[in-house]
Amino acid sequence: MCGIIGYVGSKDSVNIIIRGLSALEYRGYDSAGLAVLDNNEFKILKKAGKVAELEKMLESTSLSGSIGMGHTRWATHGGVTDINAHPHCGGDNVVLIHNGIIENWMEIKEELSGDYAFISETDTETAACLIDKTYKDCIEKGENNPTLEAIKAAVQKIRGAFAFVVMFRDYPDRFYCIRKSSPLVVGCRHESAKEAAGKFEAFCASDAMALLHYTADVVYMNEGEIAELSVNGIKFWDFSGVEHERETIHIDWNYGMVEKGNYPHFMLKEINEQGTVLRQTIDKRVIDNQIDLSSDLKWDLEQVKSWRKLHIVACGTSYYASLVAERLAEQFTDLEIRVDIASEYRYRNIRCGADTLAVFVSQSGETADTLAAERLAKSKGAHCLAVTNVKGSSLAREVNSILELKAGPEIGVAATKTFMGQLAAFSLLMMWIGKLRGTLCKSDETRICAELTRLPYKVESILSRQDELRLLAEKYAETTSRYGIVYERSKGFLFIGRGNEFAIALEGALKLKEIAYVHAEAYAAGEMKHGPIALLDSGTPVITLAPADSLLEKTMSNIEEARARKSPIISVTSEGNNAVKSISEDCFFISRTEEELYPMLTVVPLQLFAYFFAFIKGCDIDKPRNLAKSVTVE
Ligand code: AGP
Image 1: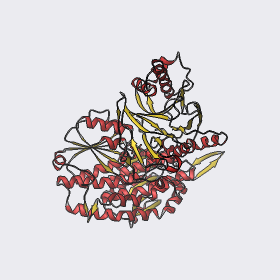
Image 2 (image 1 turned 120 degrees about the horizontal axis):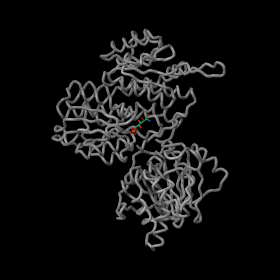
Image 3 (image 1 turned 135 degrees about the vertical axis):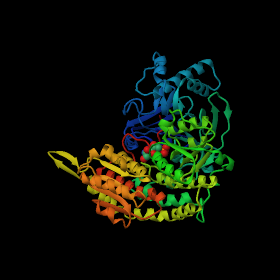
Image 4 (image 1 turned 45 degrees about the horizontal axis):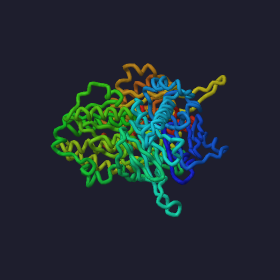
């Protein structure tokens, strides 16, 4: 979950590292630090807090060096302190940064405690010391390549997940990247002939986005791989020391896509891009009102017909998109469906095999639980499909086939446009499976495809009315002050919906919780009277998802029940639905659409409501407390 950046070349590494850390900050922002190697001396600067704090420290130092590394931390072992911030030193020879968790760190620490005085509470420091120890052993033995041998020996002893970047004091022209379970990408660029003919600049990062300013040609490191990055190029070995070649791949994202532009926050920028995301998702996949995913999914028809089961597995927002996918699959296919949270799926006695299409949904493609769930399904013989936004991600590289979201890079920690991309991709996928299996009606295909091409305009029409949602958020975020104590107008929110709209209720509540720190609970509207209705009173607004679908009358009865308990009702409904308006304190109208596609419209006002609510409260919207964008530890 931490962010890692490294550079070696002829330029000063400090600016490159700071720029990289700023791009990676969404991965963790408990502390930031950097190390450079200058005249065979390590110079380290680190600080609890955001990258801006580190930048302030830099103003009063004169740090420079043509090789260096930087880290943003999401704390696991050890509190958020300057000392626990990375980089960490191992003896005199090694400096290291780490993303992941070392499971046997106590054992390693105990083993080394006679030789090393540990100063932090982190698991990472034990790895730095272990590599220092194995390095000294290799020097003593007169090994030819002591740095590589030291790393090989150390990784045999470390259990857990790690992406390490390691610098050795005696080798100012190179650093090493080591990957087991945590993502790491390396890239290089030939310096211009004018500056240094024939030489390389080499970079590494935990996310290719951080390198886009310098290069779009990268290598995603494999499991159990070591890379040596130097001004002469990049070399790769496996953990047993066998050297191999790797091909670079070109990323079709550019640097402009990872900038905020004129928006105050990435989240707002990304919400506003959702019309475009829909267009990009259906482009070349919906032609003349017909669905065609044959260029994405090179499936064998016989295999598709042999499937009996469909598993859909994900975490967080991706899981809520999967709940919508479940209903689409029920409607367009004849498969037996189960949808699961990845952290549960991976520990169950799952029945899956060659008769199963197992779909793993992850915008980042790096979520540890989703990856572990995929490995389980693969080991049981399922055909694994990734629905992801990052085609070079670990998930994308491990599965049998990929359906790409085409949402472009998402930086805000709260997923918004990738959720939209997932909903659209799922509507295509489920129709496509149905079409191949002969269970999709022609009329459904035409009806849904035609509406999908109109949907971007309907999303954009909601986006053009953001002021209404700002005013709504202002009303409910209102506070009063009595005896010096600040009371919020709303104690918490209940989100309710039926069918697909229950999934949107869950997503709306998650957005409010994660960025505005407001307690919000989502319930299937019909389930409310089995408990949560006890929460309702005039201080607990109920946000109802009530578009004109086949369950509208039932949802309206649930609205009445909440109203009878004096809860203020905020409804999202389809235009012209004045019956819902008349029983709501506040009502936001969306355009009418096909029942299956309503989630792509109803979610937008909820994203904006959460955004404005958080804005009014002064929350750090793109970097909410305690969170990180990619959850790469279990
Ligand atoms: C979304 O707003 C959250 N930050 C989070 O729930 C996220 O959706 C989840 O961690 C899954 O991430 P993934 O899609 O990258 O696997």
